[in-house]
Amino acid sequence: MSTNYTGEQIEVLRGLEAVRKRPGMYIGNTAERGLHQLVYEAVDNAVDEALAGYARTIRVVLHKDDSCSVEDDGRGIPIDIHAEERLPAVEVVMTILHAGAKFGKGGYKVSGGLHGVGISVVNALSEWMITQVKRDGYLWQMKFERGVTVQKLKKIEKTDGVGTLQWFKPDPEIFEVTEFHWDILQKRLRELAFLNRGLSITLRDERGESVRERNYTFDGGIVSFVEWLNEKKDPLHPIISTHAERDGVDVEVAMQYTGAYADQIFSYANNIGTIEGGMHLQGFRQAVTNAVNSYARKRGMLKESDSSLSTDDVVEGLTAVVSVKLADPQFEGQTKTKLGNARVRSIVAGLVSERLEFFLEENPKFARAIIEKCMQAQRARDAAKKARDLSRRKNALEGSGLPGKLVDCKNANPSESELFLVEGDSAGGTAKGGRDPNTQAILPLRGKILNVEKARLDKVLANEEIRTMITALGTGFGDEFNVEKLRYNKIIIMTDADVDGSHIRTLLLTFFYRQMKPLVEDGHVYIAQPPLYGIRKGKRQWWAFTEAELKSIVGEDGKEFVVQQYKGLGEMDAEQLAETTMEVGNRRLKRITVEDAVEAEQIFTDLMGDKVEARKQYIFEYAKSVKSLDL
Ligand code: 0RA
Image (cartoon, rainbow, N blue to C red; front, side):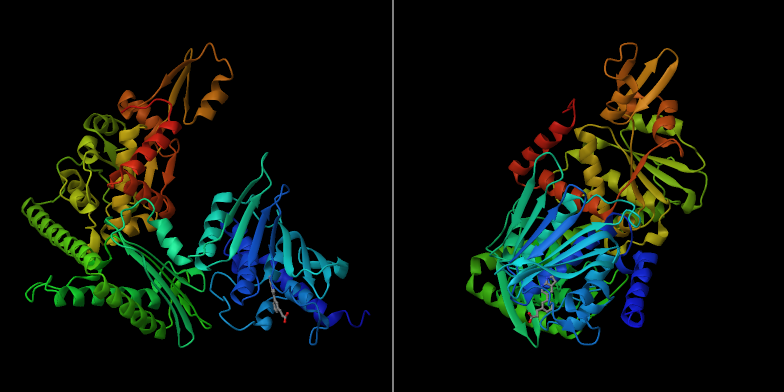
């Protein structure tokens, strides 16, 4: 046998070594994201089997030892001997890099830039892995350790069933963290269930004291997705949807206008979220723009002298899911999430035009509501542009153009400068006293004014405070935003730990995300974390930022400690504020991610929208999470 050992085995070991040496090349990173990528890889294989028409259910279980199993009821990975490799096919799939591709199953094999690295990568990065296959009358099993076969394929028992189980424990030698997060997984699994109509996906968590289990099955597919996205919004009409195959591209679209002011359009190619958009999204946007304009002209709602509705106008308040599946997806862009196949644009545009034109013709009442909504967006945009032009002219007249309320820093180098957006004039004064005047600038914002603005984001621009802030940042906003003109590397929102503070924070984050997106994407936005408590004992002084920290300082009884709760920034003096919240080295900043901003946007919708129920719910939820509520 030793003469045989060379060929395949060496190839296998080389492959495993490459994966374990540079895991990032295969799964992105070895942090949280990479860890969850392992589950996605296993799940994607099962979803492929469902797309091929065989599997109907997928079951993902998080076990107590931080291992994860993914089971499907498909045909089972083949076990017959692979001619070239002279190993059972399942062993080839599990141990040879990129072997998955050799088993092309036709149809719309998912082979995106993010997924499709092959289950052998999961195997290589797992402390152990067990593969079970039910087919041909038996349950078969193999075992691996760090990708190396430790138990050859063997029959376990008789069974009539079919399917595949992949059970793996991520290797702590590879991963910085090995704990799966329920929230992350359920979000993706729910999304996959929406995108694959009828597919039943169960997530079960056995790690805690009580078992948690959820099943996601949506007979409506992406129509259910849109329904779910619009749960808290005011839809203007029933969901419009279409599903067809053209030239080998399977296209599904569901859309619904709401009273909201932002659009929410999700696009996918082969179940992968195309964050950077691409041809399918372009085709969709183009078709909606054309259909809405041509209907509005035909009905005389847009007069000959009126300018056409822009794409931004016609997508305001639109919730949509565009999902395409194709055999040869080209993923482009920085994060390989932009669909490049040019023919997909006209295919999607054609289908959407056809469907939307038909809907508008058939439903004049709904059509009118949609057109009116879009025209309102157009008017708001025109008004915002006028306001922008006006303020630009005004600034030019005022010389330096920097607002009087801004307490600027001396250092003119943006990479070293920070801007604190501080709630209230009095806290602004304190912050001014506590800042490092070389690098830290202060802009006080009058919270109450922002807070009562229960209206569309465009109106926010009419707000003096916000205009002042835009001028201070130097970037412009909306279509004219230019991140290169940013005058500060860090923009730090510093608000009180109460409901008002939380409103202002939400509004600012939503504003940044919608009107100055690159600020968030490039990580320029932060939230200051003032302490919740000051604790004294004799001459010693501590700060606690969480309840847990307070407990750990004062212990269970804590009799000799004097604990002061800080509700507002104004309760601290300049020195205290500097020491706890502003000084580099001492302070704790939370950097805002796109996910945070999206969440803020959701909260903003709840808070500012017309749905009283959602607003009540938010305040109720919020009230539970803070001890004393200052209303
Ligand atoms: C290739 C061929 C066949 C099934 C599969 C792959 C398969 C792979 C995975 C991975 C997870 N679950 C899976 N289920 C099936 C079937 C070939 C045949 O039976 O004719």
